[in-house]
Image 1 (tube, rainbow, N blue to C red):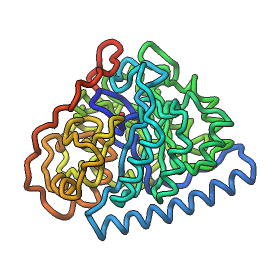
Image 2: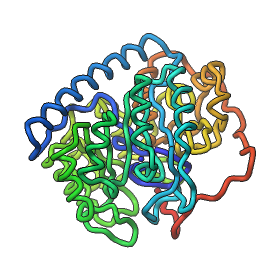
Image 3: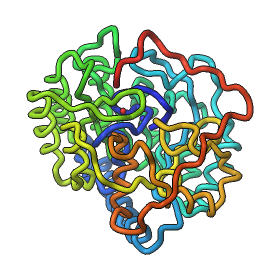
Length: 383
């Protein structure tokens, strides 16, 4: 949902845009439609526990700037789909071994990290994902997951319940599958119904708008279906291959505002950057990526975000508090026209303090040549 230097839509792997891919804190409670009384109670209890931890997370972040708030981590780069806009997956790599994932999670927990969102590739392809989630919860971190949803069924949903997952997001690109994306409402609706019946974690459905979307009305249909099933709904705006914004057209803006209104109580709505992105305006803010937000790729390297891999490109095991402090004070050249919503949401907690007066360090070259990620067709100027 965030994750890799690529042109991509609503983040089933990369937290790339506006309100979608990385909302995972302070979202409003979602209902369980067609669920048993036991499932409704379990979801209510998990929501209340998660909300209490989210409030504690915000308090901790306001008191101290010395720890990461949100981390995106990649346990699996391989994906079962080949969406033509995406160049952030491959069709051959192996999952990161469980013990290595635990080491990375322990390192993040020792830094004081509050929230971890698992992304990919397709993370549900990882054979030990449930244990990865359990380890996150054991170390006291809020657990989120971004998936394309194709591997979900009743049994898998119950496993995610038991593992302690707290937030799940699926990005749906269209109403009917086409040559660009199979992540459609038609192909996923049955799985959404199962989530509404059995999931005790919070579910968000993200739709997309912008250049390359054949029918912007699809975003509205997807959002209304999400709300009908009791989920929260967000909308993302396609960015270019550097994660930079593109303005929406008049009808797209109308749809954007309507979808935003469907979830207006959500914490993720309370910041002006979303409206700046929709209108192609630059946004004045202080990006704290590399410090308060980290993106950990499958090789265990720390990056600013999915759209700026290589900065700083340092192994997590070697990433010191001094390095995090430097990135906290570094002015990012990509910030004014950034569309990476999770980073901007995290930035809200620090925009009011500590001006940035350092320049970025040179990009770190990889120690060994990296295999190219698959890119199907032409990457569109665009999660």
